Length: 182
Image (tube, rainbow, N blue to C red):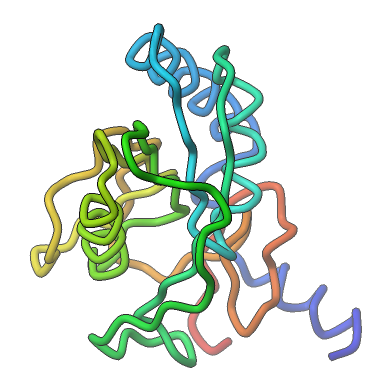
């Protein structure tokens, strides 16, 4: 895709969360998580790929020694939920006896997060808590609410700040809604 086409798409995007709004909320989340885990050994597991940018910023706001690993499980294929979880990568760090914080970009259907929580509890984690940048307000969720939520957003397809549409827009510093017709 040529840069001109990408630029024209940016012009038809409505900004939902600005870079400054995101940064301020991440600072708050980092402080809350720091207090919740003070005195405990924390392992942060980043749900790939969308959560990478959020996690990088969040990790710098958590004032604790911690371990970091990545995990990839998804119910999405071609921008749509299949209803079935596929694990795409395993962990490098041990989980047994550790306090796990799962970090993801968005809580949508909840399938991937529900799967990951049960998966890590099954591996013997001492605790598993969740933090998401955004929680879509859906009635059909199959998961309890995340322990930490950056923003509650409407049920719209969002991109930017790690979220993509066909691998485009992940690098935007804000979260936007693509206008109809794209």
